[in-house]
Amino acid sequence: MKFWNLGRVTLALAVSLVLVGGMSSCHYNYTNAYVIVKGSQYNQVASYRLDNDTGQLWPALNSGNNISSGGQDPVRAVLLLGGRYVYVLNHGKPTVNSDGSITWSGGNISVFSIGGDGTLSYQQSYPSQGNGSVRVALSAGGTNLYVLDEYEPTPGNPNYTSASPTATPANPCYDSASNVYRPVGDITVFSIDASTGRLYLVQNQEQQNSSGTDLTYFPVGC
Image (cartoon, rainbow, N blue to C red):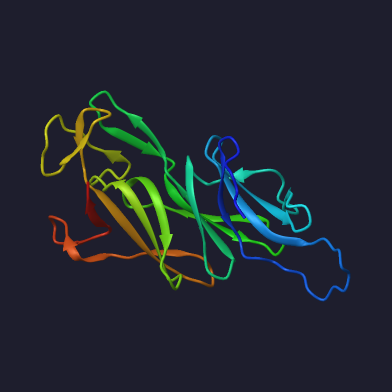
């Protein structure tokens, strides 16, 4: 089955199949699956039930219309094994300053629990260590969550991305859109508590900052 984008509300993922058995009728109607969608224009997520007979999508019971994504510009979502929790990645809103630097707001990973009827309930949000998050993925066993950030964090100012007119050790990556150089990207790693859906930051024990403290992220280059 293939889904298409509808306006600016895009398909995020299809939740585990929920099949109804024990029916003897040759023609019956049931919820085949739940589909979770994200809308970046209004920073929302919503859950719909998929009708097996018609393929029509209906709002999940008791979910109302759409609910807040818990941040700004939701771009990706992943479902934890078992179908109890979904993680929505909010890219964040960038504001480009006069010197080419960027101030960020609303970027995070929001956790939602999924009810038996497919309804979503916001739990809490976690900040990625870098800024401009663009991708999120789960490990094969569902024990870790990985977030790819466009820019590593600026020491002492986590919601700020610096800029330089020339390449420097801190800003080696050329941004052709703004004609400045910016920091490298990074991957933020979390371990997952499968029973609660909570995230716990994993330290980078291979690399340290200038103070000799383990980094809270993994640099990946431009």
